[in-house]
Image 1 (cartoon, one colour):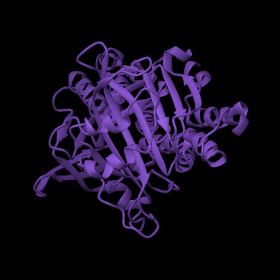
Image 2 (cartoon, rainbow, N blue to C red):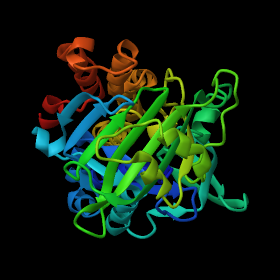
Image 3 (cartoon, helix red, strand yellow):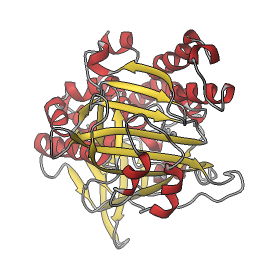
Length: 413
């Protein structure tokens, strides 16, 4: 069996490793002309790290990332709403990593080349179309730089892991239109900065209309500094009537736009405005998702990751769900008698779960606990338990963890 994978992001590359571990051949076709460190920081949760660890990637990730120790939710005034330990510090068998998105992708890419060989990933290839028949699928790729004809390849299965603007998704759902945008713009950056709290701590501040994320993603040049990631999300428009801005992980933002927003936040021990000002370059990205689909698989073609279920970047679940997709699909292809049967098994296992996460993320996911507290106490509080009880806060945070598959019991089973 040969699986053609359109898209060399975290999901597509992980799938290649998963398939190889199960004795299935694959070829990855990536639109970019090279795999480079695009984007800034993300968090990858224990349920996803468990899958990467089983592929032997844990030492590589430890060398380039931070094992997250604790997560703290605060309101915009810096008052603590919720705190919990994370990863191995919380009893999980696998860590949570705060990591540069591009470095995570690069680590998986290097593992693919080392394991599958240098021809396993073909860059500069954009999926242009495909034709299916009873015996397989023929995919056509164009040169991503010049748009000229590039390569036609035959396989048993085609997996579209080509992101929120997936060619295959558009083929199956031609009337879907652009991604959904509620008017929230996300600015992101990273720079070396003095460590705060444990040096492995993560802050999330503010509700969905004005949110801050702050956490280290790599060691710094000294023992007391860290490469520190920040993200500021602000609702700047009415998404219902305003066109979606161009979305690209490498679109450079304007500091004069984001610095005034940075002044809104108070974070214990961190001067947010100074951190943002010290960052050499920031990137801007509209927070978008798409409505859940009724189906992903059509014959020998299926969707994976953001092509199947793009979601708002809350709850640290985007890359994680793509990794879980890869595990599910690889298992199904190994165990099923026919490729099309495997795609049905994969879809049945993953579609409903990810659809619920997409919907939960629209209302803030676990971070909704901040919105609820700010709604009840917009001017701040003296005791958070008098605003929203501990059991009520726990129900929001832990309830999401269970539905997204990363509760302690689910990961350690």
